[in-house]
Amino acid sequence: MTSSTGHAENTEDHELFFDMPMVLSANRLEQPASDAAVSITVIDRKTIEASGARTIPEVLRLVPGMQVGFSGNEFGDEPKYVVSYHGHSDQYSRQMQVLVDGRSIYNPFYGGINWKAVPVNIDDIERIEVSRGPNIATYGSNAFMAAINIITRTAAEDQGSYVRTNVGNHDIRDLTYRYGGSSGDLDYRITASTLNDDGLDSANQFDYPDDTNSNNVDYRLDYQLDNKNTISYQGGYGNNKQQTDVNHSSAEEIPSRRTVDNTQFFQFLKWENAIDQDNTLQLQYYYNLYDKEDRFTSAVIDPAAFGLPADPFSLSVNGDIKSERHNLELTHFM
Image 1 (tube, rainbow, N blue to C red):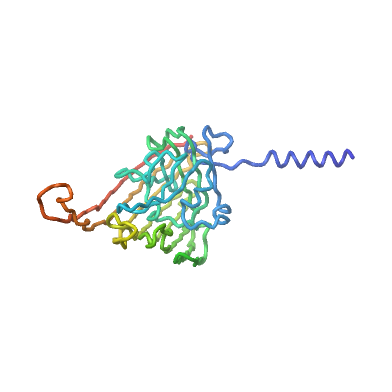
Image 2 (image 1 turned 90 degrees about the vertical axis):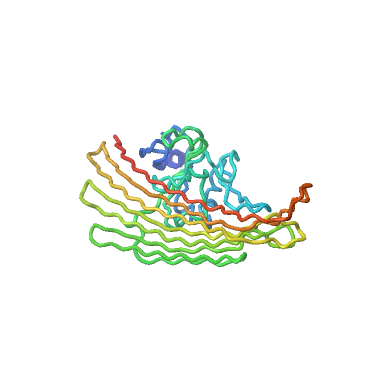
């Protein structure tokens, strides 16, 4: 009887005192999640695979308090994923920082993230750390609501060939190919993928034009210089062609269509020097390019409808955007 009780107590102790996951996003230093001064949610590789998600925003639905939606309207705005914390945002999420391996992908030009064109394949993600709440001062003013740190797998973890395909309704046609290898102290990986679907169902008799086609290529090289020095180089190209409506269309009209072309490109170089057990020096540089092409002709505008004596006319609209960002950081961890 005594032996049985002792076994039960040992089992309970084992379940209670399990190892807490180590996180990097609270103050940019590795620490147990239980010691972090903020609320942190960690989504690991197994959870991502079990979720069946096709995109990063779909994975973020697992985070408590995180709302993920899809913005699209009949006035011609480009349909986009909306990711916000407690719903305090619009489609641009201006107060939420997003990083990939410590590289910010937040676009300050219009504020927010175009999730469909991010050149990061979901199969290359090791884990996602989400720091929730206005306590992440180290990430700047646009991290007031939350900071999302997407951490990818090292090149050494993905050796050999990998192929995954996904076919389903709504014209879903996804394909991913990855190859990784090594040569001495150099490990490398390259991933190419395409995601395609015809968007969401429309409430009216015509399908709302929100078909999407995304093509991404990203690569990574990790080189071990010696026992203390490592160099990591990453790059990627992502292109998303998003169909949308040109102008307001009623239920009796077939929506006019246009295609918005979004391109993202990045280069990321990081050098890390482990000086000793308590000191690490890290130098990183990255370049982000965001290029959007969006040109169309407006619907016919009739000034007579406003009581003005003028002939009907149309406007040529140029909504192109190009944003470039260079960033250099030197950090001493101790």
